[in-house]
Image (cartoon, rainbow, N blue to C red; front, side, top):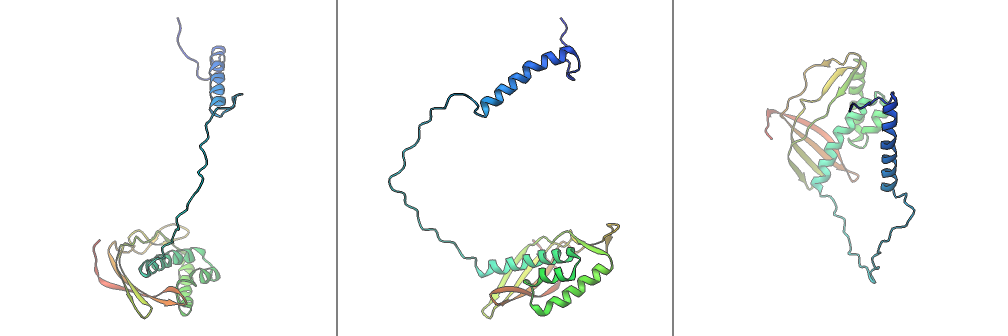
Length: 196
């Protein structure tokens, strides 16, 4: 007896042996999808007479959490503004992350990068060591930030321009509370490595 199976379906034998399998899978699919002719008997649960919903309170984020969120969103916003390659869009993107007086100088810096036909790549990896908040609406984030996976590259060639940052840069970023929002007011690289 010959037991070879024709997989391609081109021979007579392949077509004939493929039909029962196709019917079987179509029938199985119909059963699984509930295409039967009889309704299923399912017992429904009785409705409870009295349902009580406990009061849910939404926890407000702490000042520390708000400062960290502002710090991290500033980095994302500057990456997005730089990628826009458009001064008006860049201004709009970073406007809610820095004081208004800082926007023009940031956009000037981006224009210089665009003129060199460079683009940013990557993003920092945060290792926040501490957050200091004073009662005068000032804060500082101490971060052992990893900048080794980000930098600038030529837009046409993709070649990396300059060396990427260090994997252990100690950065102190200052923030101020203005009109209910934490805004980035400065960044001070500390001349020492840090550990995480």
